[in-house]
Length: 421
Image (tube, rainbow, N blue to C red; front, top):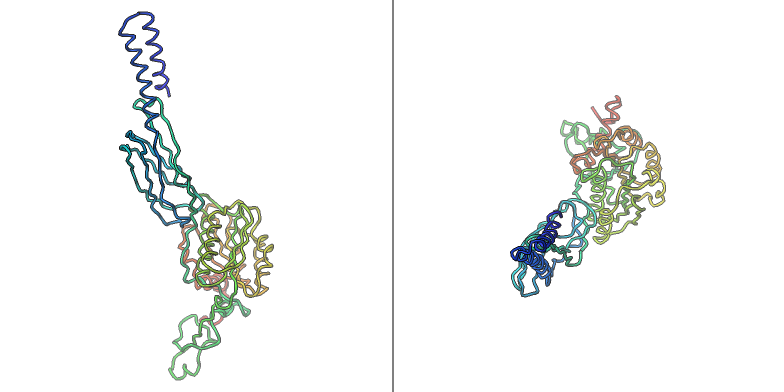
């Protein structure tokens, strides 16, 4: 800015000197300084004229972790070459900066490609350009905006969860059948040798006597996926429930889990609904199909943890949607004792309830979900505890959830599950 001001002051100084001295050389210097200003102005004005752009049509949406190619073309519609144009793409996409400098021949064009990595969920704009032309002295830079912005929605990443299975909770007491009864049907599929941890109730005595070693019955699977008519995903988006910010926050963990549940269940042919209270209330009734899935994933791309409703209030408020043929999956980072009461009431109606608890301590918080996890397990509710950096498909392994719950609550307290040796 100072150098530009100085170049405007110089002609005035030369003019004063020419008037004072009358020397012809000084007058020539004055005329030359004016010509420099005029040529610089015309250079910039003509260099920006006749420039146009075209951007390849972007995909409507993609997911975190994916990438796509952005192709841009700048055209020179005039016969005058365009020299040293600076081109910057206007975008709100984090971590992306498309900046280039090049010249255009007469009535020519220049194309370039950029690989865009989707790092953060949300809605962003791409495709419009700001072209800057300047003279050699940088006195008269001019900018021109070209092209129309295109919107793209980056949906949260989704993970395959092959070992996640909501477990039925028929029966009473603390034995394995309390947790695992829903995994087996009434039909015996085969006989195998006994292994540690098998329930004594499953011993097939006739085969045991014949083989002279313990043999147990295995049953046909009877998973809740086959009897449930709807799946509800409840996502806690209360502002005070989540710790840290950025791509590795508890909020992003929660959204990724919710998106994975939605995709996995829709792919399995079950109707899925979504409830959240964030920047605004969200309620989507269970439905089927890929279009419905992308509708929910798009919603999860935009939802933000700015809500004021605690998760226990949300569960209680929306409990009328959950019946005996529902699977209710609650994802929260809030260690609220009242959540136990709310989930127990839903479970009492016959719904299958799963609580996925994100541990605030691992994200820099001070509260722990350990106590509420133990209480939920004692109340017959399947629990998964997720910590920062966890391998989600491994943590959301239902076999680990049930066994870990029984181990923590019964082995450590001296109460052994039925059938253990």
